[in-house]
Length: 103
Image (cartoon, rainbow, N blue to C red; front, side, top):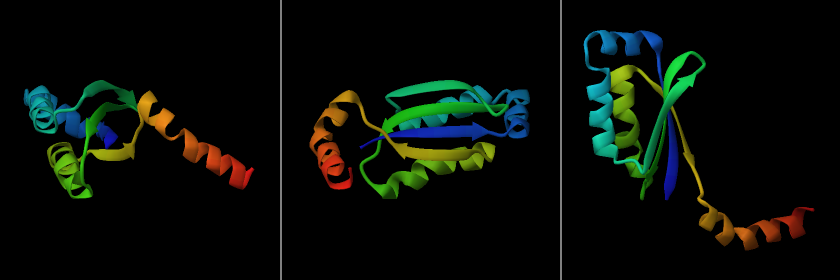
């Protein structure tokens, strides 16, 4: 199943890693293990933020996804299942059933 991982790196932890010359290499190492389909970086609420899209087959994989960010940067994360257009098309009958039942 495809997930969106939002990672917020606190400014102090990010600055410490950047000053040590390790910010980019730590992020690259984590990405190398996670192998996201796509990764985007920006700011959110004044913090360095990443939006990563990846596949996860089992909930037991959550610690492997989250812990590197927690440990390396004291980061906060959000993890959300997401759909691509084909997934949304497949969900059409479930949407229609909900509309009929709860309209």
